[in-house]
Image 1 (spheres, rainbow, N blue to C red):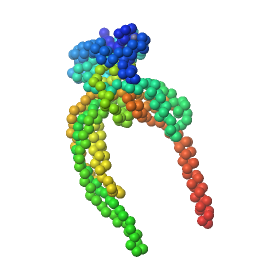
Image 2 (cartoon, helix red, strand yellow):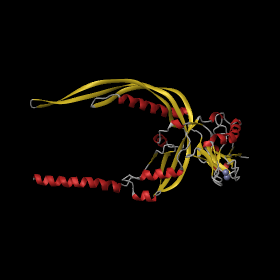
Image 3 (tube, rainbow, N blue to C red):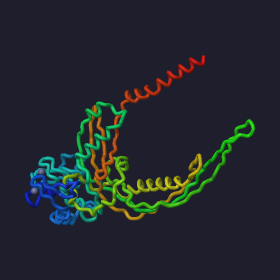
Length: 366
Ligand SMILES: [Zn+2]
Ligand SMILES: [Zn+2]
């Protein structure tokens, strides 16, 4: 028999509980009671701890649930089946799913064991912004975009909004290196009838180091990397010790990209920051060209954290558009279509009067 997911239920009325960003508490939609994360953790934490201790098939991924049946073909190995304790329905999830909602009764469901034992994240930044705030942010994103087709703003329908706790690895370390630049400074002066440009060439050398703390790299293969990089930064002053109490009402995945696989991306970002920092100190030249350089990254501690992201998927003229919003700060990124009609219209408005002016001037010259 498939293992049960945990429905976090209101201790007063047994209604479903969900974490509310504005209050930072778990709230019951039925009787209006609210509970602190610590109170709910005390009630439900034991079940998760027991699930984590159940020996798994592999050391790294305790697979507590039964595999989904063979109807799923090749995907069956990546799917898990659970039962919903509220309505008894069978829930088929990805092997990485840690929190979801029952598609039949809508109850928030937390999959036990996914974040237990060695898989337990160290930190979480709880959701602060609500679904409504994500929708408002998307509308605001459309505004002030002159090349956006008008029908897009009117007809672009939001298909799906998901609040997801995305797994991240956070890297500590130091990048140390140097760079050599070829720089120039010129001056212009007259000698008699001649105009002389004197250019001095400089060989500029810089060396230094930058330390980085908790540089985040998303550890979910489902999430587009460029979106995840673009919605940073997160405010780490609100980093909390992890508790499953923050999950009800949201989706959550455990990592499926390892620390080793993420290290390269982290290293590249550190090297780029070092390069920018060194380049920033080369001042007072008119041109500056980087010739060569070195960079060595020393890694420190790596922490595992869940960070909040609203994913919004919209559809317009048969095409899907994806947006991601930082669930803590509201920073939103995504692609918008460009109306080429509007673009050329604006271009013509600037360009045409100038060319008319040009014709007038050339006529006067005749
Ligand atoms: Zn209640
Ligand atoms: Zn259910």
